[in-house]
Image (tube, rainbow, N blue to C red; front, top):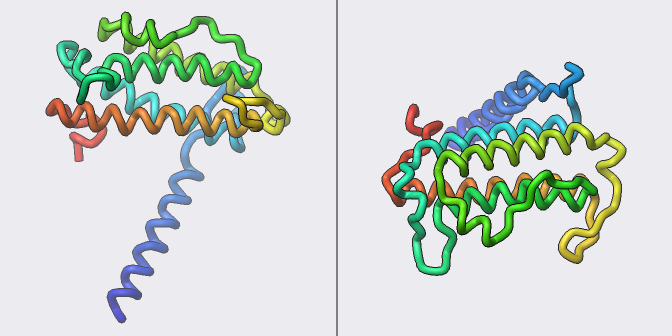
Length: 188
């Protein structure tokens, strides 16, 4: 019985700690200096976190491992990073944004230089931030069609976040299979 009480108390404590840390987290700032709050602010915080992890992991993986793939017909390490960047440019187009560049499946295969890949990844996240800052709270309820499915702009932003995090997990697995510990967990 005590075990359940202690476990319940621990869960409540951790939940309260998480809520307090989220409330204390700084909101993303647009160029005007005003804080972006609500859904867009939360999206920008998630975007900052996933970008930091992806870029630090891409930096930690040796350049000679960028061509590694777990099996034939599966994206290589470099192709995964270029795919993420491509998604970051493509997906906002369903919200009416015009990407400054297009990354195709062919581009994913031909850009293999580590420095170029990391720079492209960073630029794609900068583009996502610009699109988010130009999107108003009222725009979040606008309707669009993404891959044949009706959705709101808010849902497109959730798809973007899911896409980035899905491939972060893939990148972590690839890195660990190559003996690379993610930098943010190496300190623990």
